[in-house]
Length: 370
Image 1 (cartoon, rainbow, N blue to C red):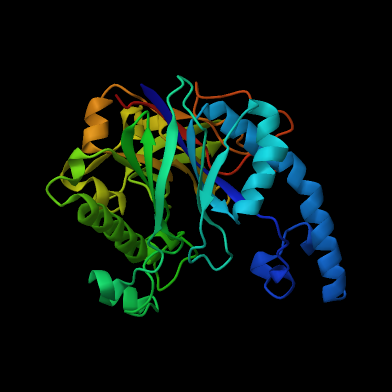
Image 2 (cartoon, rainbow, N blue to C red; image 1 turned 135 degrees about the vertical axis):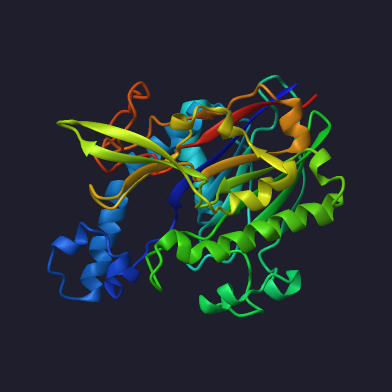
């Protein structure tokens, strides 16, 4: 009995307009920044036109990327609400995969923009095994104080002891696949942000992601028992905004690009994988071929890294010891620099920077659930 499980940050799948860019230039779309806009009313009118004009190509590419995963269950990040998810699935994805993801679940988390984690599931697997939703539990309300995770480093970042740990949520989804229980933990950890206090964005926000990872592990251990949790069927799926390795890119298109694998001394992922608690199945791929995200701040700062994860419990990883995840990169924009031999045929109408399916690549894996 095989289940195809996937995760994908679909980036701002919203059913409302965001007008905050009128007062906050960091939120202003670069297209509108080209024009001299005289009033908020004019800005709102132009922002609506811009968003509508750009969304159709983007969501076609997003749907193509999801369809390419061939997933029975897909965990998603940056979904506005259930209405947005329904409209996207019916208007775009259904046209590509036919009878599709009838089961959809999400809930409001802690994201200031209102975009959170979600899951879509078929009624049955490709092999005809029923997929049954059992229950959904949000952990968005958990605080640092409740879990004993408040540290001076967190205080230095402006956090309070009674503040909520998760920037979005740790959404616990209990299922049965062909009668076999499976629990998914949907996450989207704190983004890296801008440099601060003399540290780069990743280092400065690391304490928050470590706290989130510690909290996820504690939730799982309390659910299944600390001594038995690794032996149960569960997976942590989502965008963790962190990596244990990155592929540094130097050179240029004329003289050729060079790629160097760099190991990181610290990562929130280590908190989850320590002691064999779970496994990052993507690390079964060659080091140069694990990336799901292209990061650039210009020619002086470019790298490929894995931000998107399916972490398998020890039990699931052992049962699926030879399973190697797929990474769907066809929705990447043309600006993404691929190492030699990894080039793919981009989906139709993918642009230099946009439209694109997402800056992230979907990750999918076939799991033996028998």
